Length: 111
Image (cartoon, rainbow, N blue to C red; front, side, top):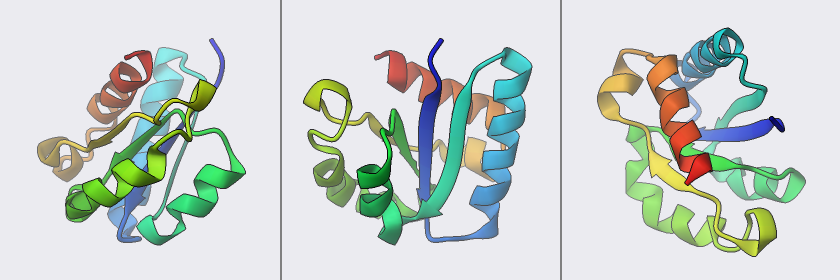
């Protein structure tokens, strides 16, 4: 399977970095080749211009920005499609459940 690139956007807190680590551990356990990274919402446009992103997940603390992100991801995906976008489940985020958040991302990527 080709490497997947999963971008998490947040308000630049440490908790999202910890979630990325948990997701990377879950991906390794499941044999999923994925680049998973977090960046502040303010850097999302630059990241989407620099690399092909397979899905974008927003931290619950920036869920109010979903409308803005819907515009950002328009036409930026493979074959000119929109990049799949969703807000991370608040309970999974709070519990730092990397396995569940990875599963959410996988489901989005597969459509």
